[in-house]
Structures are given as C-alpha cells and as structure tokens.
Image 1: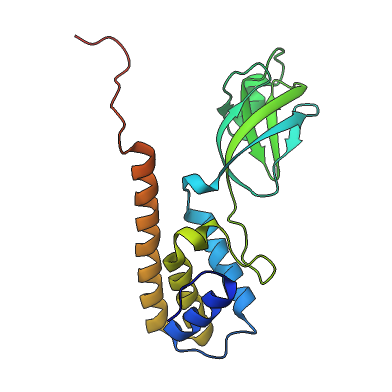
Image 2 (image 1 turned 30 degrees about the horizontal axis):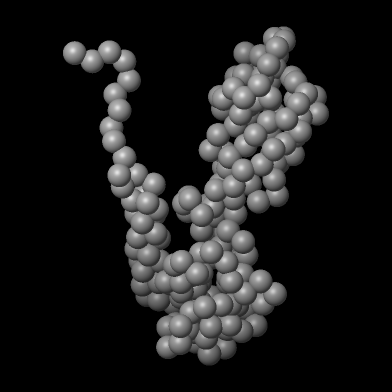
Length: 200
C-alpha cells in the first residue's frame, strides 16, 4: 500500500482495501457520498471559519460552505442568541434597536430586531471536496484513515456487501472518534475549570 497523499492514491488504496479494482468510474460519486456523511457529523477546529456579512432588512445569505454557527455577533459587537424562527419573530417583531437574536432560515441568517449593518459569524464549514482538480484537503492530510475507511464503506455499499459495509463503517467511526478526541485535547488539554458566581 502506498502513502495516501491525494485523490489518486486514495482511489488506489481504497480499491485495494475493499478488494475492488473496478471503481474508478464511480469513485467521484463515492467520495461525494462519504463527504456528505462527514459534513453531517464531524465538527473539528479545522472546519472553523469566520465571515463578515452585511445585513439587508435584517437578512443576509449565509456563506456557501456554511454548516453550523458557532457564534454570531451583532453590529455593535454584542453576541446574538439563536432562536427558532417563530420565537425570534414573536420576541422581536415590533422592537427597535440593535439586533438581539437570529435564526437560520434555509440559506439565510435572519436577525431581529431588523437592522442594517454588518454581523460577524464564526461557523463550521463544509469539508473542501476532493476531486481530480482539487486532489487534497486538510482532512486527507491530517486523517487519511478517515477517508480510507469511509471509502471502504461506500465501496461495500455499492457492491452490496453487508459484511464489508459493517467493517468499513466500524473502522471509519473509530477513526472519526480519534480525530474528534485529538481536536478536543488540542482545544482543552490545558484548560482550567472556572465556576461562575460567588464561592465560599
């Protein structure tokens, strides 16, 4: 097995692991399916981005690669609370002043009370897709085993091999847990517990 460093080497190694040498024609689709599953569950620091968005009547389109908000800050620098759409409108429909809350509606972020200005958003972004034209990304560089086992699972699904699906899925989930644990340790490994409020 060669080192997995790019799209082409991932194709070779995934085929070898899955015992399939006839996957080149479906490989782009299998990679896209694996990445769709990653984007639904994986949340690590490498996925974090920041953007400034300009409101128009309190609304602004989200970045194309948006998955989930981490923090939203209003035009005056105040943190905004996330609300359901119905609760946001019920609380702030007739209020004036600076925004106090937001809701994600489709591909738009809606801020209320309605305001102009710029909001800052920290968010989790989609994993940059692997393609022949974009042969590597941060996930393949840092955790090639995650991609490898995800592709073994997808190949087994395509081959209608339930034992291969179970084996690939188990290895993929183990590799993803390892990546999440590594991220957690990097973020919090030397942190201290701070208790709010008065202490005796």
